[in-house]
Image (cartoon, rainbow, N blue to C red; front, side, top):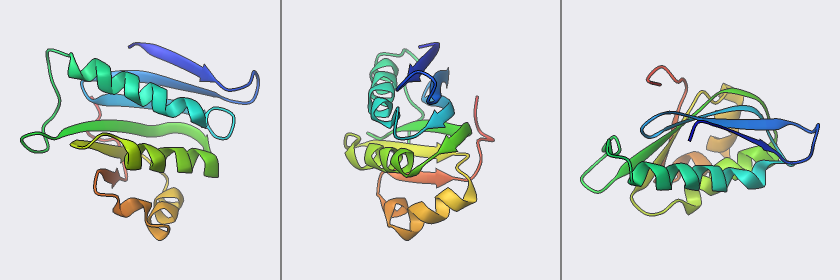
Length: 132
């Protein structure tokens, strides 16, 4: 995939997405009301690319797949961006697990308080130390 730039409205904040290896996607920049609607397309593109990859996915179980989202380089995340992340986890196809790395503790707490952290196909990890 390389590096892909998503800008909802010029000058309002740029979100970049870069493939870090099989099953890893690094997001950087701003994720908010002006570009959050672009996030599902980026993730779905990565999911499709990974399915046809010769390397396959890191297995969770026999039929499960993981997509790791490294969010350590996201500089701004508003409520629209948080909702977009939670919608991704709620709407991703069965058998796929999203692993969020690098969310600030305050965002992890918000996601936990509203129940988004309990989604069965979402794992929230505090760092991106496993990143390729």
